[in-house]
Length: 527
Image 1 (cartoon, helix red, strand yellow):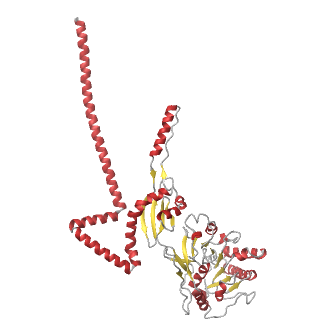
Image 2 (spheres, rainbow, N blue to C red):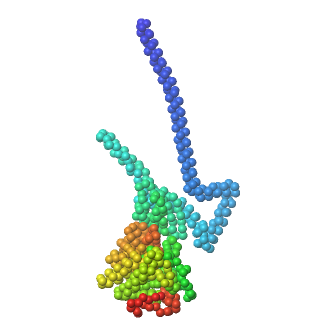
Image 3 (tube, rainbow, N blue to C red):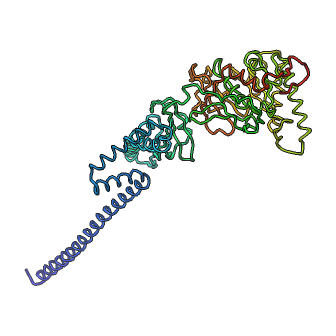
């Protein structure tokens, strides 16, 4: 090997040595960098987990502050005083609460019971089972929105289909979030937040399925916010027993001004609160529909009993049309105008329209609402079995009656007139003017299709299950109309025959004679 070859070999070897030295230095730098990045990654993951844990704790403290305070108090008690004293105190408190519940159930439930029951139901029932109920009723949203990329490669397209299928199988299910639980004497209010892709109407449509899942008779959905609904479950039926009407006022001199004619007691609601009906104003025109024996008589008489004092004082003048000559005839003395046949019904309606026109002339340009007085009392028309004269009679009489009822319901609000009609068959052919009644009550009906005829579209889906009312529950029905956001289940106060006679005796001042159309043709009677 000559000198030149030796020099070349040394140069190549030196270059390789330099390269190896540089690579070693770079490797050490990269190793240090990777170690630093790994340490930073571990630190970041730990910090992220810590932040999530802190966030979860804060959410629990804010969302369930009562439970957290209770647990903190129990821990502090055990730490300071010991667990024996805690057990003794809890036992004494349980005995006190039990005695309170037995002695004053209403007060206990108002001040203590409902809070304890809501807490228990929140954690023991709804927190564990609500998600499963919602999923079983189709109230969850599955995340199937997988992006689709356009490609011309057949292999890539096949792989894309496989990837999409696997992604869809592994996609999650979004469940509405349970926000809170409130518990009353008979109802539980479970508030949930909807997930994107849902609307409140989705919950309305499966109200019966939710009731079955909860094993209760009724479930009703109320929209509280655009994305929050309250799922209400009825644990106990407060309307399973008869509701009594108010007692007839004693035979004393009263002016009747103490009775609010915009909210006259008629019975009880499913929430245990008084059910009232207006006899004046825009919501006074009422249509009551129900099968035979459903309790229409209770809806008729209960408000009249409650308004006995104003009727006697002359602040309310009641007229009656009674095609059967049975229901209203039993308390005939209450009615200033009374008719049975089609001809007599027209006379009653003509007398009311005459008074309507008179008030127009007197109050035109002076007021927008006629004040109630003995000179211009509330004119209340009770039209029993309205279908008998609006369909099942000769055409001329039928058209005349429908025309007059339409005038009273469209023009009578501000002038102090109210019409209350009662019908068994709530079809449009039977009651052509049913849409003019601003408040409608549906008692027990024979078919599901009759519910929207009375209460309007969507009433059945929102919980007005009038076709499921048992025959033994006379007076139970659903109310929906102006001023009522959701169908309200009510029960009218039962009015026995003796009470009707007491009412008649009270209103007529002990049996004073009252002029009726059947006695004096062409004249209007006065109470």
